[in-house]
Image (cartoon, rainbow, N blue to C red; front, side, top):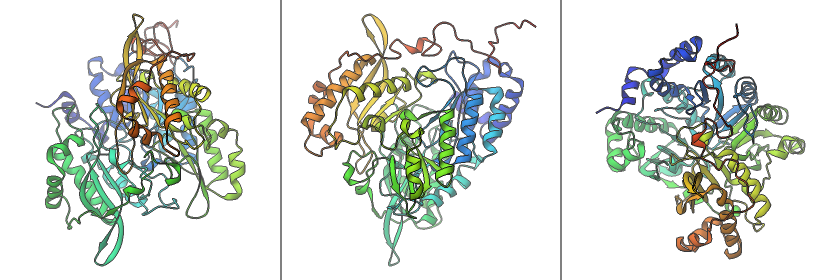
Length: 591
């Protein structure tokens, strides 16, 4: 039996939803029939318009789609200006204030506290500089990820940007494929670090080489069926296919169409592409692609570069980049500068300032990474010192602390109805506490701490050195926010997912747990040993003992159960729903 969301999508989905959003925006929040709101909100997601959580009625999040994190200074400045004008809620965040943007783990941007009535003006501003929110949410092909320095990476194996551009222009733009069984992730990378994280995507193209007609050809091997979430993660599996850059689009499209036509549309708990690959198997998928979806002979896979992968791979820094933070030389002799933005959140003013720096000291070209960080590209050597002396880089540094550098966090209960805990402000508070209370050896440059507010794992906790997933527990008779703690995850030659060593730890005891665990790491590691290597050598039983929860002087910003509040940092009744000016709709006018 078809589930209700498939019924909703059959009635309307894809590009035609835009006109309904515009109609509702013109008529106002109350024009959406109350008994149809779930249906319309589900449809709105295709255009990146997400209704926020319960208690925040009439407020929306907008997510953009910019493949491979491509941005210009002009575009980022427009985003900052939109945030300053429209992304202001009825209450400020105590850590980040009001009017800010969030950088995402799929190399894009989210704006919160938007009013539906303002969406047309926001679209006009952003689309006027070439940005779009189309196909950034819902059951569709999400923002395509890749190496953010494609075409500029000094150590790049093959330039993947033309493939990314073709997929964006021809596949994601195809409205006939808008209504997928569930969200679908695509990645393409030609770099040696593996920064597109092909192993956790529905289909991932990774750099490879093969002898073709006597010539050594550079192209891509194909993997399918990766993904996180639901405590049922999967590594993408080899399809045993090598494609040249000219053939890559056809194979990606073929797999998308195969999943579109045969993916499970009945059980939404079991219909991601990773379950489709489980059911069919890679051999059957390869045979069907050859028979029905591509018109050239599929070659067997080539020699891959996976042994060289270092991005979030738990390898020593001497083996290669594990992120894009810092100053790095490009192929043309210029440099790109990667900034560490703690938890991926920039104020509107900082966003505009960052755009100004990119225009002043670089070519105005920018990129976003899968670790929620921005890059300024094409900086001549003569401009480096002045850029590095900019005030903004004191906060968002290219030389951050090990904890700031490795931190990521999802949206959490601040806005997400699925989350069980607050994430962003808590992570910021934890980072400050760790910097002040934990000393690590000088050669330890990476500790990846990822925080997801629930098991959907938007914060990629499963792939972290130390992963957090939000839970709830009782402490002293009171329901409090709690965290499951896992260790040993990472992406690289042999992707691994965390082992959960502590469950439902009250959030105020987690920093003490981290201090105990990291002190044991610092004292017990072999010289040069990374955290992931130490975890593997130590073993789960010992790690459980070392990761002892402990109360400390750390003060948690949101220990009580945030799901009971309309906003984690606000007491009393929320004002929602409100009109476009923020006036509660239940309040009668004095006029």
